[in-house]
Amino acid sequence: MASGGPAAVHLPSLVVIGTRASKLALAQTYAIRDALLAAWPGLEVGVEQITTKGDLILDRPLSAIGDKGLFVSEIEQAMRERRVDLAVHSAKDLPSELPPDMALAALPARENPLDALVSLRGERLAELPEGARVGTSSLRRACQLRAIRPDLRVADLRGNVDTRLRKLREGQYDAIVLAAAGLRRLGLAGEITELLSPAQMLPAVSQGALGIEARAGDAELAALLAPLDHPATRLAVTAERAFLARLGGGCQVPIAAYAQAEGDQIQLGGMVGARDGRVVRGARRGPAANPSALGTALADELLANGGLALLQAE
View 1 (cartoon, rainbow, N blue to C red):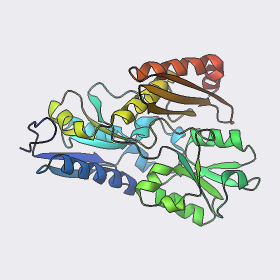
View 2 (view 1 turned 180 degrees about the vertical axis):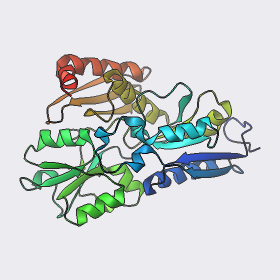
View 3 (view 1 turned 135 degrees about the vertical axis):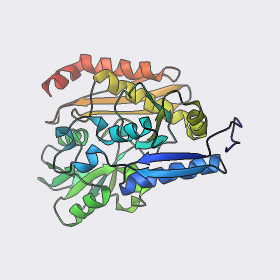
View 4 (view 1 turned 30 degrees about the vertical axis):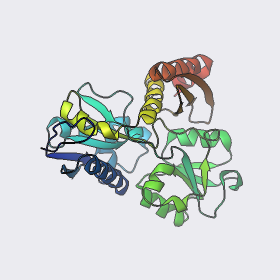
C-alpha cells in the first residue's frame, strides 16, 4: 500500500488510468500519471488505451453523430468493469451531467482556455482574405466565426491535431481553429498565429481543463486524487457546466461559456448561437460560494433574451 500525502491515508498499490489513444489524450494522461507519482511516492500507475465511438467515426461532423458521450462512454464502461480505475478526459468532452455512478473527482489547474487560429500564411483572423476557407469541427467555433466574418467559408475539419495541421499545410484550408491548450500540451504553441480573445470567440465549456473521472463513492480514489484538484479551476468549470446543463446543450448546439474565479467572486460569460452566426451573449458576476447558481442564472438570462428562440430553431 502506498501512503503519505496530505492526509497520510492508505491507498491501493496500483491504479490504472483509462484514456483515448490519441497523442493529445496520452500526453494529458501521462501528465496526470506524473502528478500522481509526485503526490504519492511508491504508487504504481498503469495506462490502458481505449477506443471510443468518437475516435472511430471520422467521416462525419461531430454534430451529426450524437452527443458529448462520444469520447467518454466506453471508458466509463471500463471503469464499471474495473478494468480501469479512473479516466483522464479533456473536460470539454464530458456531458453536462455525468452518470450517477461516476464523479468528477479532480480538476487540475487549467491550461490556456482560449481558441487559437493557425493560418497558412500567417494572417490573423481580421487579415484573412474574403472567402478564405477556415476549418473547424466545432459548431460553436463555426457560429462565432460567421458572426465575426460572415464572408469566410467555414468547412468541417476532423482528425487529431497532427492531421488537422497536415491538412492546413496541404492547402486544404487557409486557416484552422484549434484549442490553444491542446497545441500547448503537445509542444506546438509555436504553430499559433493568433489567440482569439473571449470577446472574439468564447471558449467551449471547460476548454483547457482536464477532468479526472472516477467511480462515485470510491473513497480510496477520492483520497488519491485530492492533491490534484485545483480549487479555482473547479469553481470556474462548475459554473460553466451549470450554464451548459441549464441550456441542455451538447455538441449539436453552438454554446460557449468562460468563467474566472477572482477572490470570492466568479465572472462568467456565456453565449447561445445558431449555425448561421446569430448569437446571444451575456455576462454575470456572482459569489464563488455558489458557482452552479451563477451558471444557471446566466443561462436563464440568455434564454429570456433570445437564446430560447435560437435553441428551438436548431
